[in-house]
Every structure is written in C-alpha cells, then in structure tokens.
Length: 120
Image (tube, rainbow, N blue to C red):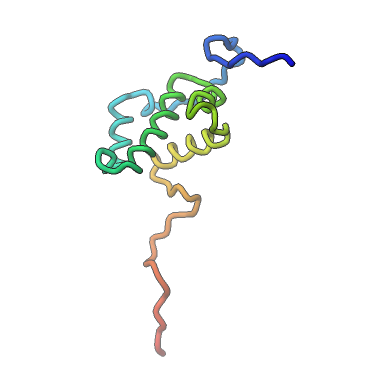
C-alpha cells in the first residue's frame, strides 16, 4: 500500500491554498496580545487559562499565515486533533473578539434565577 506524503504548506500548489479572510486585528501583534489579555486575564497564574490562550494563539497564528486547517490540525498535538475542532476553535475566537457568548445562546439582560411570585 502506498503511503501518502505528509502535507506541507510549502508543497501545496498556490491554487489549492484556501484564501481565508483574516481580520485586521489578527494581523497586529499588539491587538492579538490585548485580546488574549482581555479574554484570559489570569493566564500568567492559571494553568487552564494559559492552556486555553495557547490554543487561541495557535489558531490565530495559523490563520494569519494562511495555513490550511488540515495542516494546523496535523501540526498540533501530533495530529490527534480533528479539523472540525480547529474550525470550531476559530469560530470561538471570532465570537470572543466580537463579545458574543461562546455557547451559542443569545445574550440575556434579565436577572438570573427563578422569578419571584407576585402576590395579587
């Protein structure tokens, strides 16, 4: 059985590279750093936030370089990440930057909890 060669961005023909729309804030290091500081304020001390911020940075860096999702997924964690995870993570980065809730639910402005019974 013939082995498939490893996919490398440098070996892909230019017509096969997908052009992604990269937002302007992703191209600026200072804005990316400000976004990560705003999204993960305790990433210096908290391991969970540091790990999540590194995921966001990996996807942002791949997008700004024009790397295909398949290559990002292969290079990350030795290829044990499906492409759909990278797509979803990129979507979460865009939602977090736009200040949209990441769970897909609309933002609620009401008071949390059960409503009080009105006597009447």
